[in-house]
Image 1 (cartoon, rainbow, N blue to C red):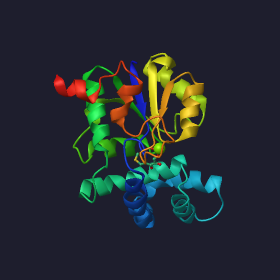
Image 2: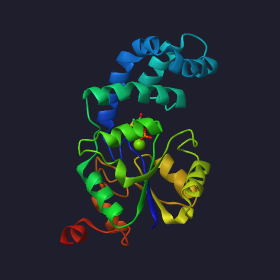
Image 3: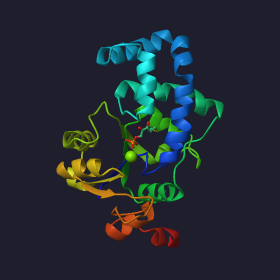
Image 4: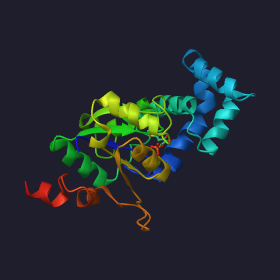
Length: 225
Ligand SMILES: CSCCC(=O)C(=O)COP(=O)(O)O
Ligand SMILES: [Mg+2]
């Protein structure tokens, strides 16, 4: 295994943090942010208006409520969240087992990458201002939906080519079965994480990855070093 590619929401970070902290923060500030940043937001609003008629701010607000993974929405959310992180309104939630696993794999020489519907800017903000401090030195690269949809195999083939390794040497971690299936269809190894631990996933935390993918260092081995 040369590289690990991870999803964020439901995988490294809780769904509740995204749904109950990040989304309401952007939703409540969307109209004011657009009014205060007309030049930067104009292309985003134009793209939204081209895809749906009507007031683009109203469309974006509805897309937040619907949890749409639309690229222009994700770009704008990232811009608004930058203010929240800078103001200390919140820090990025990352599960303790995810922090430990990412540190362990990085120390073992495994390259770490992110693939999330959140924009690359939003990803670096979350990991740069995480509960555990700045985790960005652990990562070698970030991918969002500008690379392609997360449920399409071609996106994973594009990522493998971009990072310069065979797809079969990449392990993808996600809480979404359709994403895991797409990664596998592209030739990647992939594990479905079910943090509720209801038995529907391959793993329930990052601690379990080494048990099912033995070449990766386990928490116990790392602790003994
Ligand atoms: C990058 S933090 C914001 C997360 C977000 O907006 C999102 O839609 C997460 O989706 P994911 O692909 O990480 O499940
Ligand atoms: Mg997810």
